[in-house]
Amino acid sequence: MKKHLTNIFSPESGNTVMFAFDHGYFMGSVSGLERLDLLIPSLIDHVDVLMATRGALRTCVKPNFRKGIALRVSAGSSMLNDDLSHELVSVDIEEAIRMNADCLAVQTFIGADGQLSSIDNLSRAINAGARYSIPTLGVIAVGKDMERTDRYFKLATRIVAELGAHIIKTYYCDKFEEIVAACPVPIVVAGGKKLPEKEALTMAYRSMQGGARGLDMGRNIFQSNHPTVMADAIGKIVHHKFTDKEAWEYFSEKTKS
Image (cartoon, rainbow, N blue to C red; front, side, top):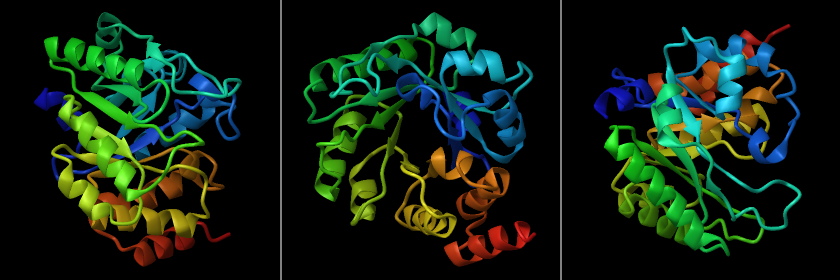
């Protein structure tokens, strides 16, 4: 278990830069992810962990890849559904072991119509992973009708941690430091929707100042005009304690035409 967690969190900084490109499991082809075979090789050296589906890992990541793998193991809904909260565990533990997963990523809908089945999925993944010392990443989902408040995130992160998840992925919000303080396991902040690069770096900095143990960026990297430089700028904040201003100066300098 500690070995897997070391593959996720840097032994030097104790933090992580994850790159999420698992969007296709419910959104299909996403702008910026049309050519995974070209994008992923260019980014591998700039992040610590790949968060992906097994299909993407098999087709776009070479087997000599030596960094962390957060394997998406829940699925079941798509953008064609009004309610995305009904999922199941789509990848069994033996498959996760074959994929060399360092953690099992499970979407968790607290307060949604599918909460009970979602908690069942999370619990099954935690129990299966524990038998083979593979940690579970509980991904706090926020549907279109769900609140994005500190009260909600404090509730959801604590519930998922109490159920046994080893890492929580959630969103940055006001009073974020209170959410971190109330959660007994590391929190990684989701990048969410695409923001202008300067705003994304400010969100990353505030997340780390609030106690996050890393960022899991997707759109804010792969939809940037300079994805590798953006990943490096995030890394400067996460691992080298850059401020958002310093990270923006780094990004600006590296992208001068």
